[in-house]
Image (cartoon, rainbow, N blue to C red; front, side, top):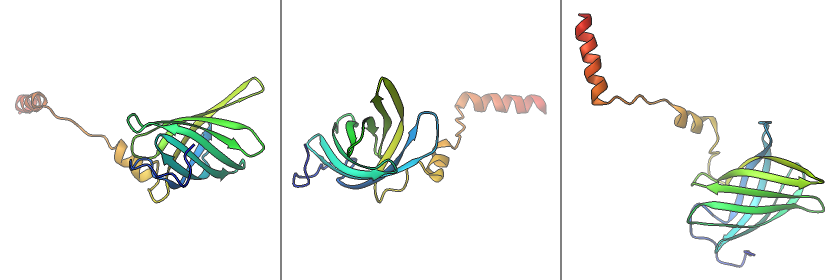
Length: 151
């Protein structure tokens, strides 16, 4: 298990320290905030945090080659939640699952290092979703032909 005394990960996608983010239940898009303190070292991650459900500890692993991560969030005195995610440089996003009394509960999550702006903010989405028209040389010729035919 990675401990606070172990050297921190050098990959900038996995900074040790405070993180924040949210999780959602199934198809409900209501974001439930969570705050975490994570430590990344040699492929192992550990930490603690809290959210509306309660306080929890985290133990898991990550891979700097692929960006894949998985961990278990264990609520103190309560249930555990299994997380599986991916880090492409804008925090870690993915899915969570709870197996309880024969039922499977699941949803999504996104967490990022404190100090990074919310990668899911409206401004970020607008920049990503802005449509771009790609005009190839063939399309330009067709437009010119149509314009000549119309005159």
